[in-house]
Image (cartoon, rainbow, N blue to C red; front, side, top):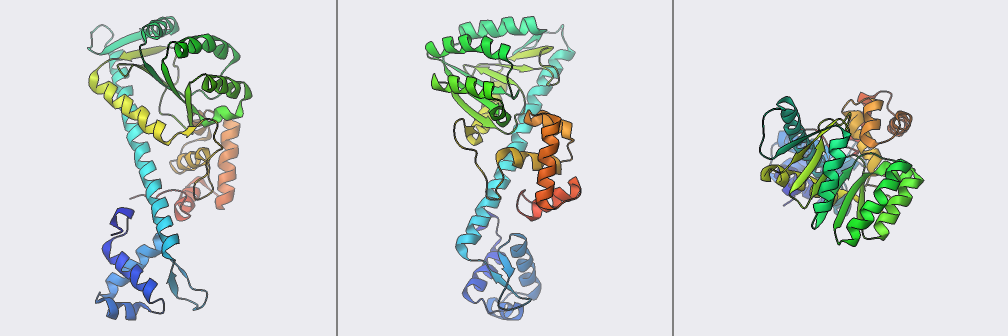
Length: 331
């Protein structure tokens, strides 16, 4: 019954028996359930890893099953974390596929590719975006992984976005969480939301991307220099994948204006992403780029999380994060 929450049948059977007969030890569980001692001990190991067993305060050296309300919350939180990790891997794969398309187009500049248009230089990119804006009919979806905006970019964006909203265009934009640390950017996004723009934030984004009317997507060839070159993608399969990528990120992003959410471990989305990046071995500079913050801020976040975990190295932080339920167990 609890298989969907990651608990196998034998472990569930042992867990239920320990709830009903908390005084039973291994030998009594073996006799009562008709299982082998090896099977019971393996189930106890699984239950311990899932934090469904805790040391008894009344009987030293023995374990007791946590109550079902706490146990189910633990299992559901773990399942949610695993689903979030899986979704992140899917999103990264889709972004990598889109990036590969862009790189392939750049390698063969003299060959026409159905569904791929190359833009070289910031002038071509801006001209094409202006044309797409003028021709837009119903909707624009945007990943904006820049963090704080410059005063110049805000001044340029206001009249354009106001015009789109007055035309009835549905605007959905996902910014980085770090924009909340820059008041001019917060003011601009608040202005946008007040006029009907739908805005959410995420701790990190896979790439810069603009999707127009679910039919045309513009992405940079390189995230290191987004002004150098971009591609316009119109292939049906590619757009289906990119729209799905946007919807996946949108579904888990936080609506702008809501107070910052914290998960069951007390971590906000930015901290959750930081600990995952630490565990994956990313440097402070790489973490800063993903989060849209300064390297100094990234170092501060990493140091704070390591101190909270009591870890002296990034590897140890990753291990402790899994042990404490901050990250899903790797399988």
